[in-house]
Amino acid sequence: MRDPSALAVALVGGLHAAARRAAVDELLRTVPGSVALHHDLSSAAEGRVLRTVRDAVGVADSGEAPLVNDCACCALREDLVPELERLAVGGTTRLAVVELWDSVEPKAMAEVVAAHAGPFELTGVITAVDPALVLPYLGDGDDLAEAGLAAAVTDRRTVADTWARQLEYAPVLAVVDGEEADDEDRALLAQLHPTARLVRVGSGELAAAAFGGFDVETAAAAQHPSCALLPQEADEAGVATLVWHRRRPFHPERLHAALEDLSCAAARSRGRFWLADRPDTLLGWDCAGGALCVESAGPWLAALPDAAWEMVPALRRAAAALDWDAEHGDCCQHLVFTSPGLDRDGLVRLLDSCLLTDAEYASGREGWKSFPAAFAPLLDPVP
Image (cartoon, rainbow, N blue to C red):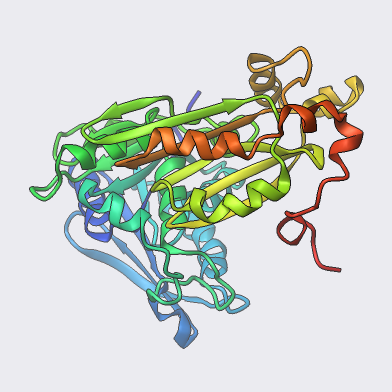
């Protein structure tokens, strides 16, 4: 239940800067007593972060936040909470719209705001989208640093993977649907995040979305490979989503050899998978812009003793129960590929060819562990 005395806070983010600004401007126009708080990180290289507070009329206040550990996002986190507290104590602000800078991901900021809730409360997380730009941004494998969008010297993210996380984390997408967007663009957006509420900027519905409520734990669970709310099968306007689900584990060497082809097979792919030589480890698959990230996401529940299940979040247990197999428990391949012009049949053939053969499968878990550890350079930390 929302505390009516607390200042409502809505995050609006996304790499589509014009769409983001349009969404924020609509909130300022339609919500009386609203202000927008923005930290411009583009000057971080000069050792400063510029902060502005504006309302529907114009800039009401501005200042600088000191750089923290050469990290612009760190400066944002350190400065954001005091500014929200100041607005809350002032008592004249009904809604604080935090307009995130281009490459700032909403997850980190949402968790900061939620962790300091009291005088203020996180009531909405929104990503602003121009449908015509979804595919170009997903296909942009450049580092953020090359695009002038890095939040720190050590920032190694790419445009594509940053955009994918911004898009898929927010439960509400504020859509600025211009003349350049076509049916393929809209189909791609809908298939990438089918559970999102799409609100057209200018429809008058964005204000309600900003007060709709937000739970950071549920949002984080929806992104975790073990229980992610992955897209379902779809095919519309030349855009397709393939859901590939198998029980048999991958042969590590054959899968590793196929990674380049698989990473280029779709605009976006993600999910969870398991390798025969690491049968107890749940592995996450995250690919955008042709760049694939695979990482350990902890053990499969089937590998845990019964006593440890009580320590596992309820959403994780529920997801495992819905996909439980009598022989392998929750161990499975569950990968989802979304793209215009997707070669479904070719992709299925390639993925299936990476699974253990009947003879390999029959050797059992002890035999599987003798397969070449092809993923060790990706998964095992260097001492």
